[in-house]
Amino acid sequence: MGTFILRRVLGAIPLLLGIATLVFFVLNLAPGDPAAAYMNPNMPPEIIEQLRVNLGLDQPVHVRYVKWMMSFFTGDWGYSFAQSRPVAAILLDALPNTLILAAISLVLVFLIGVVVGVFQAVRQNSLTDSSLSVVGLFFYSMPSFWLGLMLMLVFSLKASEWGWPFSLPPTGVTSVDYDFMTAGEQIRDRIAHLVLPVATLTLALAAGVARYTRGQMLEVVRQDYIRTARAKGLPERTVIFKHALRNSMIPVITLLGLNLPYLFSGAVFIEYIFAWPGMGRVIVDAIYQRDYPLVMATSFLFATIVVIGNLVADVLYAVADPRIRYD
Image (cartoon, rainbow, N blue to C red; front, side, top):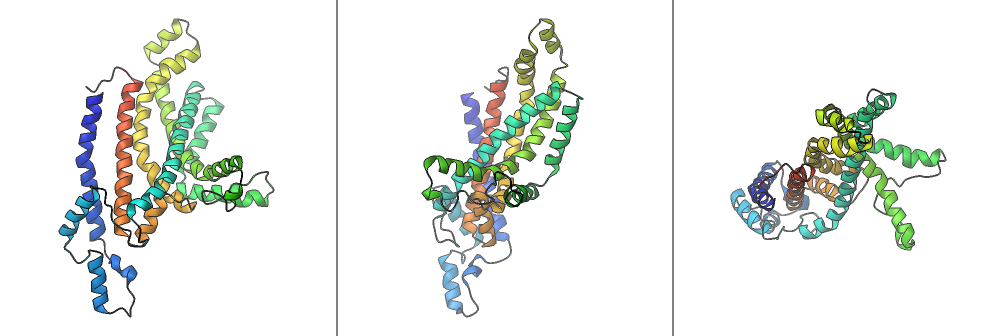
């Protein structure tokens, strides 16, 4: 296993280099001038030229590429054009918020998806199975940004108008009076702010995992070894959770690696809709402001997280099925 992990880590290095190269040239070949944000019609040409020299934009693209790659992989990610702060400091402020949002959503996606999928498979063709399939298809077909807006409308705006006993905060990480709350109130306040963005990310992906789990379970429960387990008199719960579910998990684990890009790309829209100060909001603002150093660093960081997620999925294959060995 150790050799396999080392081999995959070494194999990821050229992949990350290719991603960094692609991101750099795509951004630098895009139309427009990143120095335009600092210019105004009354600025003298010599000042504009000096501004381009200060930003390093007067050099050829290949020279900038080599300098950027050398600085980037030695930990110097440069300064943000728009915020005049080190890019690393901006990402360190935003990354924890995105990881919290993505980690909680990922756990809930597989927890809810697997439980619902197993429940549907056990009660195949029942009214409950059909109802859950319709509900799952509804959430699976909804665009995440539209679902987020609808949840915000119902559980924040309309909940107050309709006199519901609760109303969830629509945006932000904490309330305005967060610093004046007790420790328990601060925890409840943070959880309340997490509910809507996490629900938006979770519902659509959990519906997909549930449908996949249901299909795999229905295929496994028809195998001979399941019939043998039942013939031996094992309790149905043992047959389902010990024999059938474990063998259904390998294809479902594949979804872990496949869902990570969707989760982070979805987080870009969700963070912007819910004013969540994470990586998604940072990259959208950076694109609007043509902040090239910040866009390149954020894109590379997203790609690195996805590569790590796929590596974890490969390791989980062997955990779910000990017959799989990579060495």
